[in-house]
Amino acid sequence: MGSQGRPSIKSGTRSSVKTGVSLQPDDVTDVRKALKSKPASEAGAILASYLIKGTGVDLLVAVCQTAVYVIEKLKRYDELVQKYGEEEAQRRISIEIGVEVVKKLTTDFLVQYAAGQIIKDDNLPPQIKDRVQEITEDVLTMGIEKIEQQFLEE
Amino acid sequence: MVESIPKIADIIYATLIKETQVALDSQEFSVPFKKRSKEDRILIKKEILAQLKQYSEEVAEKIKGEKPWNGNTGEIASRLKEIIQRCMDGN
Image 1 (cartoon, rainbow over the protein chains, first blue to last red):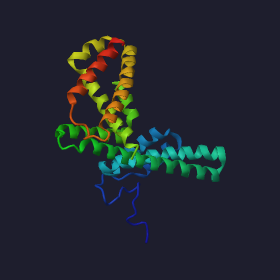
Image 2: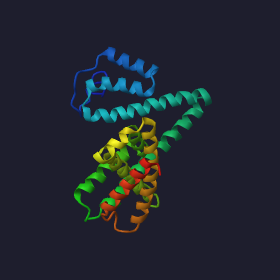
Image 3: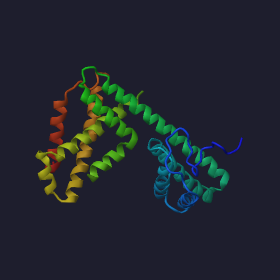
Image 4: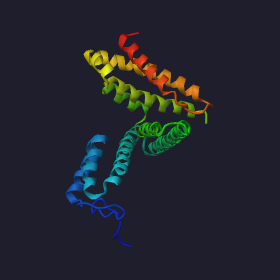
């Protein structure tokens, strides 16, 4: 078993997605620098711009969302280490991530359940069902607070 | 599944927010709305949000245990207009 076939940001050889231009060693250095020194959202955007060279676009969105989340958590972990030391920081970060993941899963499930309650009426015109589906997806992906914010800013 | 009622309210609330934006961009409301200052427009929208939130909770309660959202979209549309008009008039 060597490193052959191992998914790598450097080589862009993830076999399950269509591949684009391979990333160069300098690209990886740039990404590393960004991850160390930039705020999470900016580092995420820089990472995204490099990942787009090496991966399919469908995967990209999921990868970027995960990357931004991980970067945020790494930064949060650093803060916790400074404050409480490594052992306590590990305990706290595990709880934080656990709570967030469970909350997200529960919310997703409840929103989907609620949407099902609304649209299961056979008499409801298909265009209204479609609209409810569409809005449910927005509630799931953006959250109600962002929908409110978007409305205030439009 | 007690929490599903607030979530139904969220979906209704999101729907009403989007429909309100469509109404505010329509001929009926866009001219008077755009005449207001930016600060005024934000205040009006905040008031609209408060009223939509309350209304969506009412609707969610109404459909609880009944056949869901049984299609009185006319009533919802006229209530929306009323809310927008009232908030623009400052009542």
